[in-house]
Image 1 (spheres, helix red, strand yellow):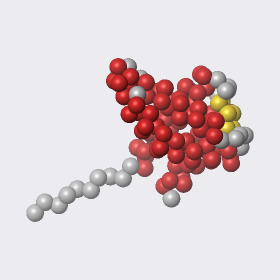
Image 2 (tube, helix red, strand yellow):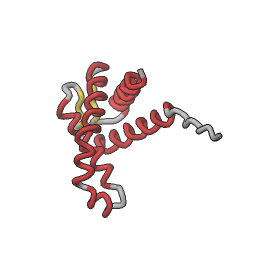
Image 3 (cartoon, one colour):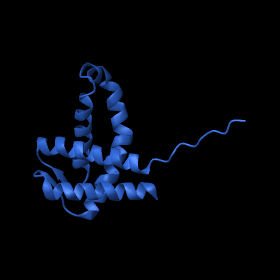
Length: 120
């Protein structure tokens, strides 16, 4: 259930971005939901591989290259999902940053509290 809500929140964020960010276009809720799922899959499968391959560059840039990886994941999603188009580089960068923040906030809000260990 939590995953479904996550996809709905990300789809809603994409819809808001499409209304407020020039160059970020989503044709409707169906495209936004598909894009949210595809983005999650791409982030799960492709991003770790690219992270390992670009680790020296990430270390050299003190982690700033991770923004480029996020932009690349959003562009891959753009290429795979019809009705989801990010046409400009500023829209890709801002969109990836905003979607990353939305994802981080979601994780913070839905984080389960740690259980305390009983000591005898």
